[in-house]
Image (cartoon, rainbow, N blue to C red; front, top):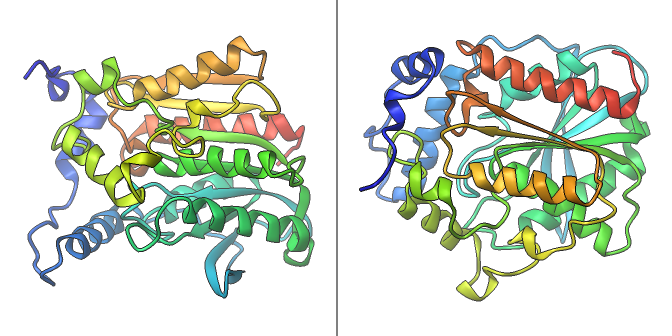
Length: 322
C-alpha cells in the first residue's frame, strides 16, 4: 500500500534486464531456506557473469584472520609490474553473494582502470555476525598494504569499491581503520554503489522496494537480523555509519544510487553530509534503474556507464593513466 508503481517507471533497458533474467528459484536442493537462497542467487548471477573481459591472469590467495583465513581473488588486467589496486567488496545483503557472483563487475573494473582488483570472500551472515565481516575486510586491506608489492601492487595507491552491503562494508572498513589509528593514507578514494549506511526509515523506503528487487520492508529487516547479534547494535557506529564521524579524514568518494531503490536516501544523505563538510565527493543517480543494476552490464548501458564513471573517478584521484 502507498508504494510507487516502480515497474511501470523503469527504463526500457532495466525492464529488458528483468525480462531476460533466468528463472532459478524453486529448484529444491535442501531443506534450509537460506542455503536455497544462496544457491538460487549463485545460479541466477552465473548468467549475468558470462562474457566478462579477459584478464592477463587471476590469482587466489588466502589471508590469515584469527586462526583461519579469508579467501581473496586478484584480477590482473595487464603485465604491469606494479599497479594501483581496487579492493572490491561484494553485496548481497550480508547473507548471499561471493566473488563468483560479482566476477564480471570486477573484471570490468580491472580492464577499464588498468588496476589490480582484489575481491574479498568475507564470511557471510549469520555464520559471521557484526562486526566480523568488517574485521575480515580490514585484515585483507592491511595485508595488501604491507605485502602488496610482492603481488604486483603499488601499496600506496589503493581504493575501496563495493555495491549495496559491499558499499557499506567499504566505508565501514575505512572508518574502522581510521578510528583505530591504522595507516589509511593508502586508500585514495571510495567507490560506493547504492549502499545502506544506517537510515532506519526514509522516503525512499516508504515508496520503493518489492519482490522485484528483494528489498521489501520484511527483506531489509531479515538481512539486518541475520547480520547483527541483537537489536542493541542497530545504532552502533560501525553499523549505522551516520552515527560515526563522517565530517573529517574521509578520502574522495564517488557515491552512486539507483532511482527506484529503497536505499536511495542513504546515498543522498551520505553525499549531503560529505559535501557540507567539504569532503571531496561526487554523486550520481542512475535514472530508471533498480538496486543491483550493476549486475546487468550484458544488456544495460547504465550499468557500464556507472562502472566507467567510478573508474574515471578512481583514476582522477590517483592522477594515474591506464
